[in-house]
Length: 333
Image 1: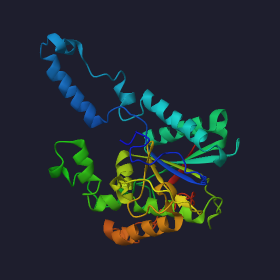
Image 2: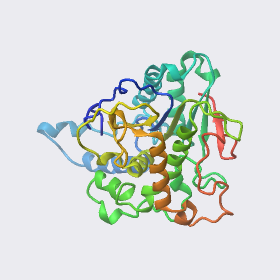
Image 3: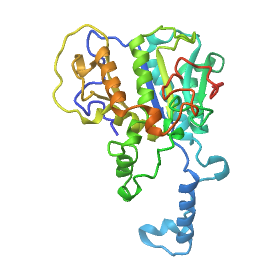
Image 4: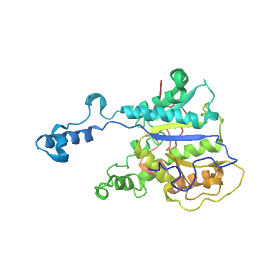
């Protein structure tokens, strides 16, 4: 999805006269082996196949078996391809934004606490930091089911009692694209708003600018990297509405600070805000767009049916500057 660099008619090259001073990169974990449910379906299929006899183009099925060699160690974990993807993304990010990281200085990567996302972040850190990553890098794992985490995580739906992952099952039985559309996309209602706390935190980071020290004493790095899951990625792009824009690219020579959204290798303009060069959004307008989305969705606690006694976060995401929360654990790359 979106791998063509100019699929929207907007070049991925930073517009002339502009320079990048902050980046928020959120990624799904790398490629993985199937989860237990999918693997059990493979086994059921294998049983049916082994009871049959095949010839011609299907003759290969006579010797077919599920491709996992060590299922107990592989199920739901990163595959070797996933190792390569996440390590490579770290290297690519370092090459893409060399001016945002000083060699041999500490850096931080955030990750959902599930093993495959944590491992993805560790491998990203090694690709980004190179030989010294294990001494300079820190992966902060965020437990979305941690004590009173509420909306203050990278998978906010895990502590939202009113969110049911199968709520759209009757509407998306026949295709994965419909599953995501009704499950976590534009037609999903509550799920489409669950990553707004993350977006609000991202807008806060950008509005405060690089080098800002928060009341916790923590100064976030210019490159904020977060690893989570495909459902959360879908919720983020749904909340942003970046897949709904078309049209020609105007030339708008303006000075100022702007925000743009890249999905894979493609640039997607925000539907509500394309008033900068390269259809970027001014930082102030980006803040207003995110605030309007948050206000329209309403209070996170109310939407999820949470009381103030159940969460420390009040439905706000602060993990990028409040790094000492009890549900955050540092891990070495």
